[in-house]
Image 1 (cartoon, each protein chain N blue to C red):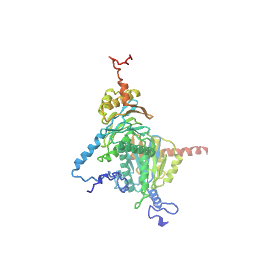
Image 2: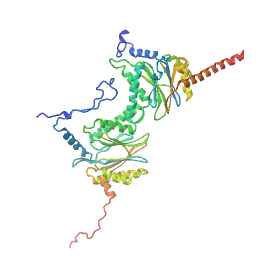
Image 3: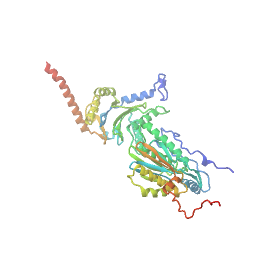
Image 4: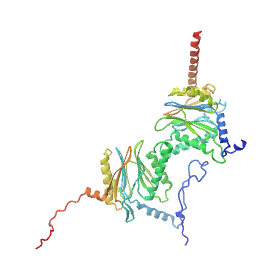
Length: 273
Length: 249
């Protein structure tokens, strides 16, 4: 039986392939050969379903008076199997910008790295740092051009630029939202609950860090796909710093210490007669 | 020598790209243009060849805006200018779309110069036959800037510069008389430089003033008024020179 490998061919965009002098400055969107199936719609639906639950994670970020607080768990799961408890889900794009990872780990890591390169090139060409708006737009445009090709990225770009703290949500559908509070991943409903009830713009850095830590902890408590270590980062005017990385199991016992049980009867050593 | 000037992509043995040098000749035959940078203003002035009677002069704007905060004047082939200006305008908007910020003057100058250079290193095309003077304000720092590009694709920033017909005399005048100015003084300096090589009068000069608020094209009456001021100042200076001498005799 002749197998069809057309879906595996390289789908990387080819820029500069056409004569740039004669084009008007807009390059053609990348495209790839569609696989030959009897029911393509069903195939497409199934392949999207295959990727969707993979956003098993909890990440969150919010802006407050002293900057941006970014936090995430560190569990990677493949279905019911926990493949790692120590994944770095907060990616350091450059000393003043952070990105969070949700969805396909490889996709997030690669495209954040790529974004870091583009930000540095912008700095070198324009002798000024790129804004958070610009960086998030660059990433969103790249992800949009790969729309429908199976990338799975749900990320937040957090940073501090000339306009102050900035936070954007960018995903692989090509969406990009500016906001002050986001949580992404399967544990996000639980994190939102804690975040929304405890959030105040005028928190101190320590209060904000504790809020972020608690939100991640509660999400890992209830969501099976989140766990491991709760990392908390702060982005301020001089760049980002890692504030803490606590194992969520230990956090549980520090928030809810085990009451020593009241003993009714106690077994003691039998006295030898 | 004749063998090395057919194609742009051929160097001559002594390191010249003749097509680029011929393009510079075309610039030297174009209308005079001058740009002067002040502390809070940048001014562009262009020579207007006497209008043909039936021509609608409003359709022959020599100073164009590339974006709200950037303007351009050029000397050389006007048709080439149109193409270059269109590409630059698209790039200004494309930059706004991709990074949600307006271009800096340096960025768009680099883009235009890059385009001009591209056409000196490709087969089957000729260079753009024009030099541009680009003025504007940096959207973040509010600092005024004046840049010049030429057919070879080089660019640099200037305090004041001239291009086109008799640009050498204008530049000499500017070198002698340039000082840090602001507001109306900058406009006067630009017009004085232009008047060195152009017939006096509002209908022979087109002037545009770029401030933080935007570009303003001066109309004929305004230019005539400033020209009159300049002539009066010149006459007063002449009289002052002759005055003390007359007293001595």
